[in-house]
Amino acid sequence: MHLTTSALVLREVEYKESDKLLTVLTPEQGKLTLSARGVRKKKDATAAACQLLTWGEFTLSQHRGRWLVREGTTLRAFRGVREDLDKLALGSYFAQVTETLCEEEQPEPEFLSLTLNALHALDEMPVSLKLVKTVFEWKAMALAGYEPLLDGCGVCGCEEPDTPCIHLGEGVLHCKGCREKLGAGVSMPLTGAGLAALRHIVWGNPKRLFSFTVDEASLGRLADASEAYLMTQLERGFHTLDFYKSLTMETKTYDRTT
Image 1 (cartoon, rainbow, N blue to C red):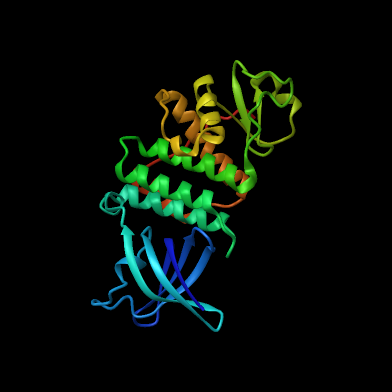
Image 2 (cartoon, rainbow, N blue to C red):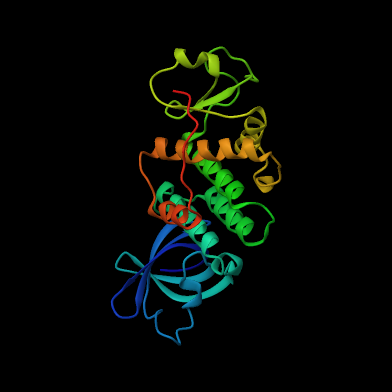
């Protein structure tokens, strides 16, 4: 069986003398594992396409249940990401989250679009890394089935809480004053502007994900909450995130409402 498809490289693992195992995300087949033989040789024509965070077109064949790379052409290399270590580390985190949340051979066109749009934002858009990271985390969780309930306070029903908070374990918006009526766990405060931005991210046009502005204080709270929410819901960490934070010297002291 032969297949020609576009794909984003989410992970690369070197093995043997000159080979790689690739994890890629494709529009129709979803996440696939590919064997790319000889691509670490200097003159291999497919080597450029078989690099982490490369969007390329691949010709594949299937042999004994494994997909083999026959040809690969780079469609977009995201050079602005590759040439900036902070951006490369953050893009690698996006790739690891996407790989974690996508199932093998299950089409995930929205996830592919999100990851490509986030890489494009890192590559070319005049927005902060904090904003791109925050948007990616909230939208990724929503697409994976962990969308927080944002219509109104989960306790009293108020649509616009004066002091909005998000309960990390329950995934529900609530007023600060309603906190004691929820179960155990951690809640984190947002601002009114931050809540509006979060609703835009989760509910808005996916083609305009990064088309909003928010003050720095509101973004800071939204960013703290997005990372904590992802970690809480998935019950795991990511080594790529640890590396990114070591580069940017981020130390989080979350503002929590317990």
